[in-house]
Figure (cartoon, rainbow, N blue to C red):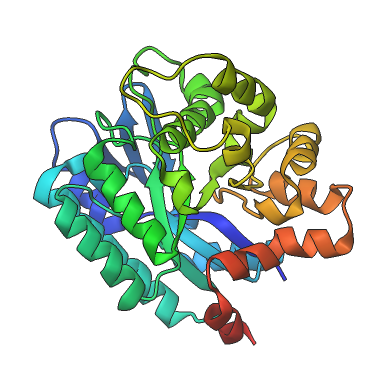
Length: 330
């Protein structure tokens, strides 16, 4: 079985809403769909595989993917700010819940959160779990001018951790990205920003609550720099007024999960050597970039068949509580 935990859809209604804005992000229609202008210098074309479920299903069938955990693509509703962000997050979640309910066994969903009002965001998180049956939450690596250790953001993540729900940590345009070429932003700055977000959450104490956090794109640069991070964590004093973490930084990184969206055999194999199969979940980032490459690399990973089955489906089924969705596939 193959469960793709990193697969995107876009709300057409949300893109239509962005067409009326005079500040970024905005969207425009073209002959094939939409172009979303997400940030200075970053525009993304949106076509049938991300706009229509039928096209996504066809791609899944061609790739042999049994179930996809869907998440909203860039930009997320939080960019609107305030009550509008919370309202659109709820609307996107309702759309996603309708998709998963209509096709049991093929789709599960990562909920979106607006972070406009903390109490309303926490209430929406509970609604997504208790009423909509979504699998967990896609959280962006930053919320524009708010990092994830901002108190109003962190309290929501602490609530999610207390509920035992999974978080898929997905990159967003980093602060100060102006002037970066799109390829540099997508290829380098995105995974680096995800890495910084993980370290902020470690420093804020969230990892002491045993959260289920799955960092996109092989955990960014964290597997490569694990030893360096751990060394400096012990070799330099903490900031004044900031408590030293209860464990060395490397031990916290051992608690991180990652998805397998990468584009080279060596990074995937290094991540496997650093974290082990039990910390890796299959993902393709469909339809962005080259979604067939991550799948091919997992198939060629030098691991046991039992470990490959863990990566392809078992870990996702356990961590995202997908028993009901998988049963619907039968």
